[in-house]
Every structure is written in C-alpha cells, then in structure tokens.
Amino acid sequence: MSGQSPLSCAEFVIEVEQRLQAEPAIDFLGREGEVIQVRAGQRRLRIDIKPFYNAYTQAPEHFDLVYATLLRVLYEQVPAREAKTFSEVAQRVLPMLKPIVLLNAVFEKKLPMLAYRPFLADLIITYVIDEPQTVAYINERHLERWGIGEHVLHEQALTNLAARTQERARFLVTGEGAQRLIIANSQDGYDATRILLPNLLASWQPHFPGTMVIGIPNRDFLIAFSDADESILTSVAHQIQLDAAQRDNGLTDQLFTIEDGQVREYHWV
Picture 1: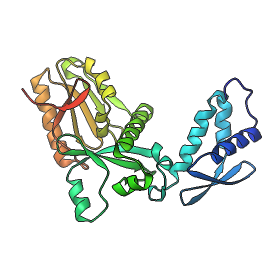
Picture 2: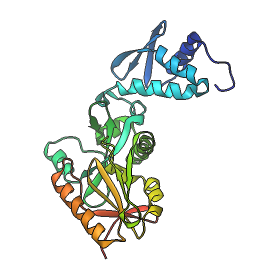
Picture 3: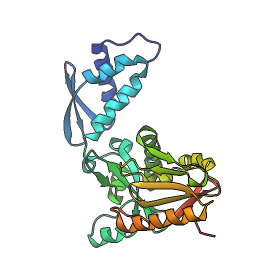
Picture 4: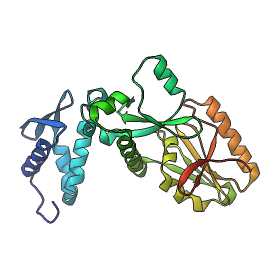
C-alpha cells in the first residue's frame, strides 16, 4: 500500500476486515466500531484495532507488517490442540533438540508418536508450537490432520527459528583469540537449538583461531570456542560435561563443529 495517502482509522479497519475475510483459517464474524470479532480454531475472539492503527500511523508504508502482527496476535490465542490447519500455527512452529530417549517415554505412555528427525549424538529434532506459557509438541496425528509432510514442518520451523533469533536472541562475546567465547543464553528455550542455524555459526568461524568448537550441554545454553589452546579446550569441555549431567533440560556433552556448512561431531585429535 506504499505510495498512497495514509488511511484514516475507518479506512484502516475496513482494509483489515477485508483481509481477514480472505484468511482461510479465520472466520470473520463481524465488527463493532473499531472492534472486530473472529473465530480462530474453536475460539471466538474480539480484537481492538485501535492499537494496530496507532502503530500503522507511525509508519504507514509498513501496513503489511502491522497486519502480520495482528494475525500473529490472533493465532497466539489459539491453543495448538484446536488448530485444524497448519496455517493457523505455522508462524509459531519451532524446532527443539531433545535426547532420543524421549521417544521411549512417548511410546511407554502410548501417546501419538512425535514428529521428529534424527540429529547427532543421540539427539533428535522435535517440533513444537510455541505458546505464551508452554509449548505443544507436534505429533504424527497433527501432520495427518494438516496434510503436510515432515519436510514442510522442518523448513517452516527453521525459518521461524532464524527469524526469532534475529529478533530476540542475545549473544555474549568475551575474550580474544584462543580465549574468545561466544555464548547464546537468551533463556527462551531455543538456545541450544540454534546450532541448527549454519549461517549463524558460519558467521562466527572467522573469529576463532584453529577450529571452532560448539557445546550444547542443556536446552538453554550454546557455547562456541576455539581448540587452538588445549588447556582452554579441556577446561570448557569439562564444564560442558558437568552441565550436561547436572543442569535441568540436559542434552549432551558431545562437542560439535562446522565442516562445509554442516554441523558435525567434533573429535579430539
């Protein structure tokens, strides 16, 4: 909508209404002034458009971004268990690394098998729908209901993780040369899973002498460091081993590296 005069509030509401009526996963129920009513999943929602219009007036050329934010707010209020179509939850799908033993627990509890793919070091990539206070694991029944394959789920999850990382992730960089450390510690539940972003890791490689080594001892921690100084390598590896065994949401004490743009297990020489 660039190049046009800014919309009035009434015009903005009408434009939003027309777009919502075209959304396949949303039933538009009506409008009362600046409040719209929709049904998303099994939930009937009322959304005040005024805050979104105020955001639009700050940058009228970014109408599409404001509308995308409104959609995200709507979908975030739909519990994963109620989603009938993948489009209802696609923007909230994220990957999460878990120990492979999780599959045994799912099997023993006679729960639907999770959607997953193998990773490295007895870890698997699971997929979750991020909700305000928790996550909902995606299983094979979800994929069947939504009519999608695991590869579609995987690509969407990585796209969302990359976007979330760019928007929210925090990285601590300390030290120089062989003493340099880069630590992801955003505490959003996906720090370790950021090892699945090869472009991010590749951007770190030039900052390390020798080989860049990566550790993901628990869900909320990722550390990159150098193997150029054996004493530092040994010290950090030992701490990773302790954290993997003792911290909540432990993953692995296996070390990793990047080779030809791919994550590989790191082996001591």
